Image (cartoon, rainbow over all chains, first blue to last red):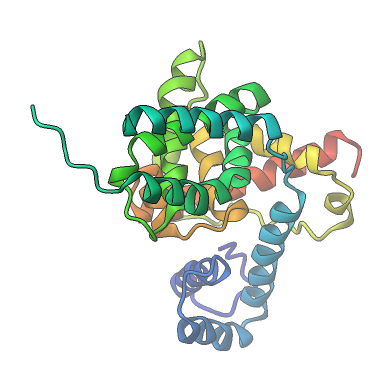
Length: 91
Length: 191
């Protein structure tokens, strides 16, 4: 975490909390663990802000990344080739 | 050498293919496109993935995580075929990466607020370019976690790296991407 003196937590605790913040943002914590993180960061506006920044990053990437539509011809080609393979395997 | 007995009958294989594999074709195509950054190669990668998946369907446990299984096949196909083809494959600066992992001082990591107007003005193509500028190993974890929503454990299995490395690589990749976006915003005169 950017420990620039704004955080009220000791440096090591701040870093450990940040790791938990990242895991919370990525949905890697249980509901209870996530609630614990939320309860903890309420007391530390700097950490709370950073959690919001990490959340906004994920939302930004997810919403902006270019998504390609799979060509219909590709789907047809795969189905045809799989049918041929199935015929060979079954034959 | 004796052949392994077939686990699934033809009807079951057909059901697995249509009900469990095909629904993930859009996600696989997007992943392939962002890895190869080329529609033709993405087509080949996805086709190869489905043909391999069907050929080795007996090693898949029906009703489990088909998406992760297919992504692993695609990732391996990309590594095996397309990196070999490239004269200058995208390389990860592992010295830098290891140095970063071992470093205890991350105070120089700058937080970038993507809610700012300069970033909100960016279009998808610009974000895609920034993502594609990352070394492929870093791009992969961002795609798997932030775009496809895989868990750390699933990413570890797909990429064959330990969970701790997934976490640190993801953290590093996100910081690199934020820096790229910031630089790109500057060059486009957003600042």
